[in-house]
Image (tube, rainbow, N blue to C red):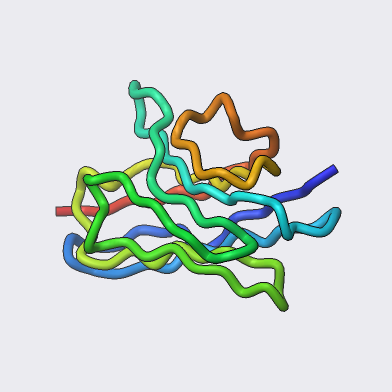
Length: 124
């Protein structure tokens, strides 16, 4: 069983930055992919970014490319999402998720493990 715990959300102004953390525990993660998703009120959960644990390959949704950076710290079993130049439309609950198929996918149904989410609110 894998446990994921997000932290780092908060209320910021447009243009500010935040760094989210996803602490993973429960088993070895060498074959895992960890992704970040977000869900705004009244909207479906959407893919934001993902990273492979083994090689550190990354993939971003176009809406965050150039503003968000996903990274991992193997020693701490933690994945980060650095969010810069935040916009009001980035407001959502952010979730980290994981699966062990070694391939980055953007559809949330392929992710087996989910954290509880952390709220990010960007005011204009």
